[in-house]
Amino acid sequence: MPISGPHLGVLAFGDSITNGGGELQHGVALQSWALWTARGLGMPYTGYAVDGARVGDVLGEQIPAFLSRAADPDGPYDVGCLYIGVNDVRGDGWDRTRFAASHAEALAFLRARSERVVCVTAPLALGRPRALAVRALNDAVRVNAAADGALVVALEDFGARNQLMVDHVHPTAFGQVAIAQRALAALAGDGMVVRADPATLIAPSTRSRLAAARADGAYVYRDLKQRGRAMRLRVVAALGGR
Image (spheres, rainbow, N blue to C red):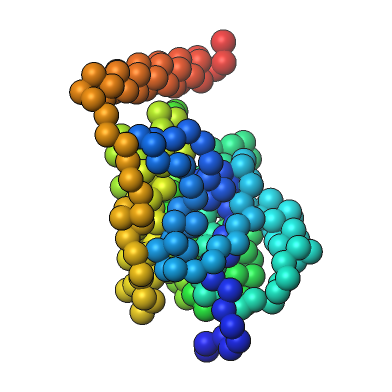
């Protein structure tokens, strides 16, 4: 049932991926995918995501912060955004059942205040070394989305070199735009009017071939370091930590 009243735009919870911020990429600022989504819809944006957050932090810190600070804590918002789980699945103590229950609670909170809700899956090649339970994470997100009527922004195949940093966790500035494009496509498929493609709202600086080669070389060097570290960790784990 549509929520009555003046809508307030886009509301987002999550971790550093949704919080945004970081280095420029070819002159483009690293902004949250949820903010780019709001800009593509021509709507205001309200973000409560915090770097390093897990799903328990959304329930225990971000939602209480929203309730205490928001001028209109009951909404309604046009879109509620939730991207959480990357830190859960990569950290100690991963538990799918516990994560799924908390994720469903966060979705229900957004659903009560939003006309539409979108949640995001994680790339399968997440992290270095790779997280082992990403499929279980994504299955939980999809089951909860289906039960709640939320839209899913699928990132299982996400991971182009210019879209992810060398840690294979955090999106680059262009990666954030690419996630927003997927979110906007999902929203458009559900009947929302998309007013601008975020890619048309950025103006990347031009680079000489020498500058491009240097940037590519730096990426390859950092990537090799990450791969080497991941390999050493796997060897230590195989030897039982010796």
